[in-house]
Length: 126
Image (cartoon, rainbow, N blue to C red; front, side):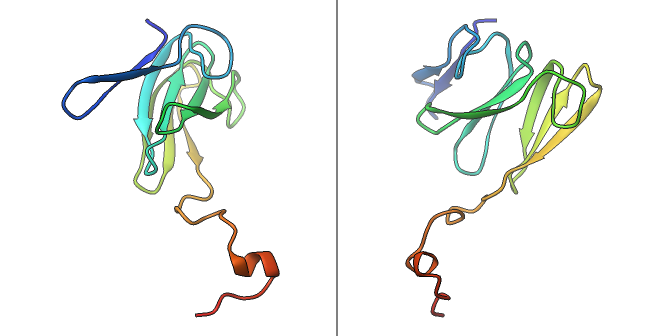
């Protein structure tokens, strides 16, 4: 109920906090679940705002998804999150009585990065 995420290193030493109380981007009301993806990004489920916020490995806010509602993709008081090794995201959607599944696109380190061949429209040399 402190509206923030505390980050510790492998030895248990405090590193930093992520977020604080508020209703804006990067802020929380009732963060409930936390997990990391394969890239070290931190995902935080906020039960009050019914969304998931994503922070980079350094704690910089990247984006959020979800929102309050009963339609597919929306959440109502999510409480838990788990991210599989293939970066499939499972969110425990408490009041909708379901597990909502999201899938990251560009889930490999090189996805989405321009290359010399993509800039010229030429096929890569193998």
